[in-house]
Length: 196
Image 1: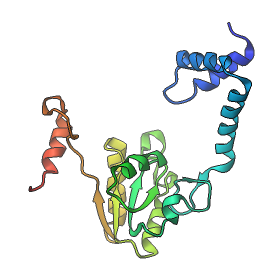
Image 2: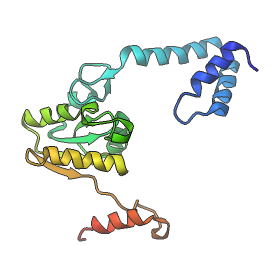
Image 3: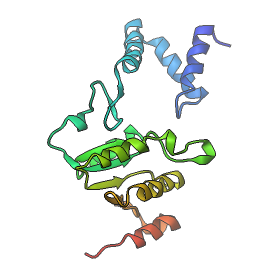
């Protein structure tokens, strides 16, 4: 239906998460209306991240350097490590403004049905960081779903005798109406209640 280069771009864009064929077509047509310089800038930015960005050697966050911005920051509390599934999970924690420790990115969550076992994640690297000393607490901040919960339980078992292990609290979000919360969320909120 479209010339081969147009069809190829639509196909490639539709491989992106959250982008279906219709969205890919809209993006393609948008790019066709832009100047060659704008298209080249976009292509250059994509190539630059593939050429320049890699994983931090310590925590496995994205970085241009050997160590990421968090691991290089001497003001951060090196005695606390917050464990997340993906580098993008660091963003909401940082935006919260309460956490000043270091991170460890697992690279996913345990999911035996999908073929993701402990050896596929950066679990042994986390244990090595704890075993190296100086870490007093590991905060498990995996997603509150089945795979995130099973990953947290696995990590808690592996680290329990080595360091204090905590889990992010979960429950009702600020500003939410109780009547719209699901049973699991209300149950978690009830279990995680604290004295005021």
